[in-house]
Length: 170
Ligand code: CUA
Image 1 (cartoon, rainbow, N blue to C red):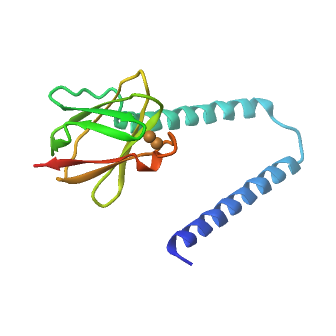
Image 2: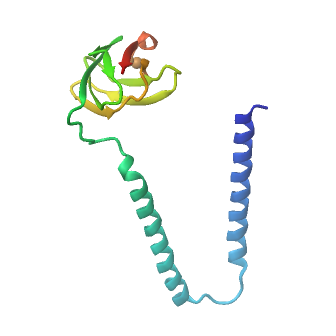
Image 3: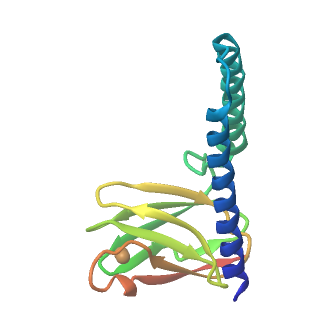
C-alpha cells in the first residue's frame, strides 16, 4: 500500500470513529433522566453562538488577505491571453521574474481554463476564461524557466491539444 493509500485509510478510519463518537454522544444525551433547565440551555446557547462568531471572524481575518482577486497591479507587466478552439495566444510570451504580471484573459469562442504549470509540472493557478469578458489575474514568478499552459475545461474535440509555453527570464 502506498503512503497516499495509508493516509486515506487513516483519514477514513478517523472520520468513522469521530462519527461513531458523535452518534454515541447524541444517544447518551437523550438518555439523561430528569427535566431540562431551559434557562441554562438558553444561557449556554449564547456562549456557543459567541464561539461560532469568533471562529468565523478568525477564519475570515486569517484568509481574506490571501484572496488573489482585486489585487492592485500598478507597474505590472501586462500579458494578454486569448483562448480559442484549440490554442492559446499569449502576448508577450516572455515575462520578467520577480516583477508582478497581470494576465488579461479572454476567449474568442467558448469557456476555457487557463492553467499554468511550472517546469516541474506543478499546477500554480488556473483562471476561467470566458467569451465577452476580460478576466484579470496578478501573480509574480520567482523562478526563471519555461512554464507550461494547458486548458483545464473541456471545450471541444481537441481540448487536450490546447497547450502553450511561455518563458520567465531574469
Ligand atoms: Cu480549451 Cu479545453
